[in-house]
Amino acid sequence: MKEALVITFHSTHHALKAERILKEKMEVLVIPIPRSISANCGIALKVEGQDLNRIEMILSERPVPFDGIYPYKNS
Amino acid sequence: MTIYFDNAATSYPKPPAVLESVIDFFKNVGANPGRSGHRLSVEAARLIYQARESLAELFKAGDPLRVVFTHNATHAINMALFGLLKPGDHVITGSMEHNSVARPLRHLEKLGVELTVISADSKTSLIDPADFKASLRKKTKLIVTLHGSNVTGAIMDIKGIGRVAKEAGAFFMVDAAQTAGCFEIDVNEMNVDILAFTGHKALFGPQGTGGLYIKEGIDLVPTIFGGTGSASESDLQPGFLPDSLESGTPNTPGLSGLCAGVDFVLAEGVDKIRTHELNLIRVMEGGLSKIDGLLQPVRILEESRLPIFSFNIDGLSASEVGLFLERDYDIMVRVGLHCSPWAHSTIGTHPCGTVRASLGYLSTKAEVQTFLAALEAISRRRQVS
Image 1: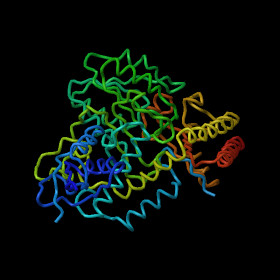
Image 2: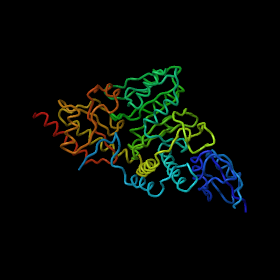
Image 3: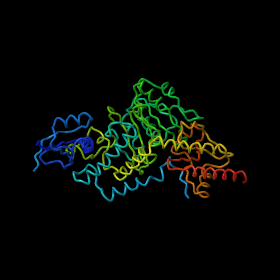
């Protein structure tokens, strides 16, 4: 089982665009930004069991500006 | 039954889904969008994002993040003009413009922007794209025009004017206040770089909503700075859309209603809306031309007009006609100059103005017939007295 990934954004608007696009292909959760990750807007997206490169590719294709993609351990 | 023929000022009534969407926001969401990480704040932001998506679909604009919200079209137009033009730049516009374009341009002129105002044809209120071409200069930065006239209903040749701008390497901005929602708009096909729209007319949203579509690659300098819920560690304005141009808490209940209005337009289809309005135009034109003493300052072919009609009745002032229509027939129209002194000067009705009847998708043929009968009676009354 792959680790969960957390994707962060500069703006909530960008996060919501990414949510719409990723939701067509996988389960996506909108979460408050985890304390361990510093980022610019209050929310992040969390996906489970996904390949980091695939996420990066989907977001770059549309395009959706994002800040970073981090592996995330469920606590 | 009240007949509301003032849809060019604001559409009324609205589709029920618009009201429900506003109420639903207050009942079930209520939070400030994008300012917090909690569920309700995210839900509020999602409502606004959906409105961006629906508008991007309507204008065939591609990326929803290129749609920026404002309080109305005037606010949007000001943001674009002041965010784009600098002293020494040249801008071309036409003489049918509303004060929402005329006044900011007159102010920019005082600040050193060079302004050319092209006269529209006094009999049709239209402008030949070639006239824009003839006014181009080396430093022409922008051509700005309205799409549909709020005074005469004339629809400008946006494709033709857009081509002139593109060939000249100038930006092309369109004020779609009267057309967004009731007339086909394709920003790419029309070469539109910046589109200003209002939410509360043919898009059926609440008042206090509007916005801009801004083509990829165009950076407007913000005119309003402040909190955006993003990049909060910095005291500098973020440089990305939509945040850079959306400071302060937005009109979320209004935008939620606007989204429902745009979705109504998308579900009905602009083609179907246009077909209904064309039918109303035919009934109206046929009736008006038969009324004795009715003066129409311009004649426009039905395919290049909106259901907006400016006229006078010989021997009566515009305000008298407006008064009789309301007092005796419960019909609401707008009389006067319609915030458009340039346009009324162009068609020879400045400073007395006209009576303006403006219809919308929710207007009916029966209402038009009642209206025509009322006008005929008013016209007859004039001949007796």
